[in-house]
Image 1 (cartoon, rainbow, N blue to C red):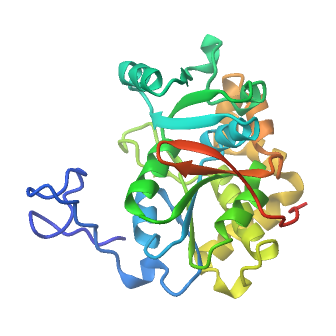
Image 2: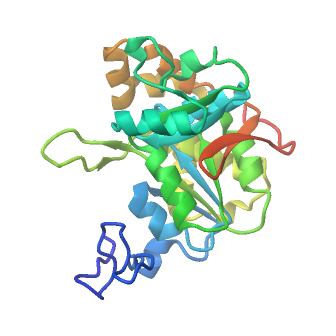
Length: 291
């Protein structure tokens, strides 16, 4: 468990507002073993995991397979630009889209552009799309703001090889962070580790080793576990996602096509990279294919 400094002057307050003098909030302290120091390929979960393993990283890969990073992958593969935005801020999102000359995604059931990677395959080239999401967008912004100088990428099964090629191009550690889901119960929305994000992270890490040339022994045990999960599932990714808790949840509301779309390995050959407020496509160096 991460150490949590208590009280004013004892560390981060957790509210993100910084110190009283207007400076940035102190980062929480993490025990050395939890920071995965000494490993070039690292893996963790959620915002807390990002804060723990991001020091010194030259690239941070955010993974939210069902459905944020899969939707971003499809959209930038269609030459669109995606502006992530926090979920549930309707008026603010509309104003943000207007300020950036972008369309605002909504709910799929309302017949508009949404987090559906299946529907975004029809997105016209050149579209600017504000894409609210509950987990992935917040994690992407936390990486952008908390890891200065690092490239922030949206990774998933659909773009694992391309993301690995771009993330692994610069020397230095790569932090792969799975967004996970949230428990909608008395836990107050605590993080729920999810099969789909474990597999997506494992695919990116496997490609970093097999295609981008990172030594396998440079991966932390946490990263190796994610790779092992991907290796076990790679012959039937569609089946694993469909039978997972998140996949069954989406199927129960009629979105099983999104689960199938998200399970396709290396469908896009470009990597979504966050530049300021927006993800856009970066062409990956030739790095092969995970199939």
